[in-house]
Length: 364
Image (tube, rainbow, N blue to C red):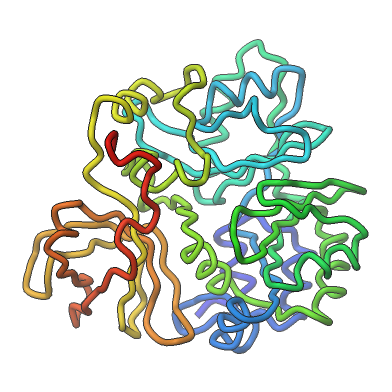
């Protein structure tokens, strides 16, 4: 089994100083090669009821700067970039020509330009496409992941801890703050959550300071919070599968139907106004101990071979089993019987139908 450090380096270009710090802080992997800090169940429980700090090295921080940065990004992503003020943030998606989401990104605007957070596994393709589109625009796109890292802070005490440690922190959802080389982004979640971006040396100091009051947590703890808050991060196995409406991007203000053109915009807008989306995002539960993989199919029953859904996000729950975000067909939802495709064909229940319904059901 690879060590936690080997697993991180295989997946992401994480600074060596950051890897060494996490190892000295107790980072390790379990039998499923999930990164944690010694007690995965306690870490996941703390994510729900306490305060945690989590390594988010699976996210790549990218800087976009230049006089034309706003105009350039407005023409690339589904969200209304022009409406993001300085010290603001928004989710957005980059689509293909068919309007299918290839990656979800988090855009954060500071006085120096934009930060863009994207899953490391999808970074290379996105960067190559964006750089091709720059042409003669005054835009500089920099992969900052070799020197900078992302850390997540979540819990009822998260804001006060950040203010006490740094002297600043945004209060409102989709707000950001930047000072002395650090950027803090407040996520759109009723459970207070923040993403911090900064140089590895500075983040090590901050991690040690926060660890006195926050539980260090592995990736699964943060994954669970993403699932419960309906943030549908796209992975390699689900890239190019869904329209923005299918994965609840309207609720996140991550897609605009009044802005100008972007790749795939014609299809997305046509479906919104004159078409019909027949698949939607829902929150599910499966009482299984087996790992539930992102991209796996959901079937219409334990005996059926008919796939009626795809898992977009998954995480173990401290109460047992797994919580999942999945896109299901409307017709299958009416029948109401679901199962995983694992060996035991574990049953799946829908915790809430239309977990993230669109504002207008008439158009989707």
